[in-house]
Image (tube, rainbow, N blue to C red):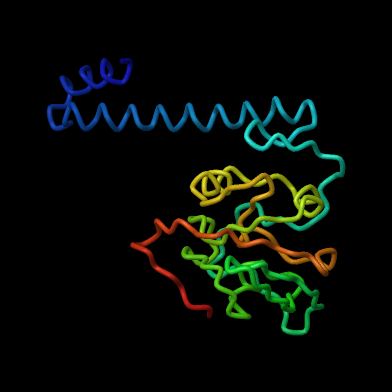
Length: 202
């Protein structure tokens, strides 16, 4: 209502502003602001009693130690040295099979999957703009990670088969502590990015 009233005032002073379109735009912005403000408030309230978020409700018992990229928007992901230490990680694939691969310390889990041709999409190529690199982590690994950023939470809201320990592979850097970890891939993904674009590793 406030947006519509303001719009009427603006439209009178500037006839070039389309009344309906401007009102819709203002309402949309107001709704987005309210949604993000609510998320921040909820996270702050849950942090005060030790749990992760109202949606997940996981109690943290350990301080975060594993590496987290904080919604870093690097095309393709971080750069890991070719002679970086390696750890073994297992991708539990949707068809029930598993792939044990070597992951370079410092690269993202999405990059690890792409180097070994594991079918983890990553349609946005690692810039935290889709949910197709959705992975389900072991609880202990999940608890060791820092909180997901607001951008990552927004993308996870669109993920297929969201679980309590879901994260985006593009936002998690490999560390030596991850040696032997098993990462579950969801049964399907939702790709809303560029009309179903699936990138090729590069």
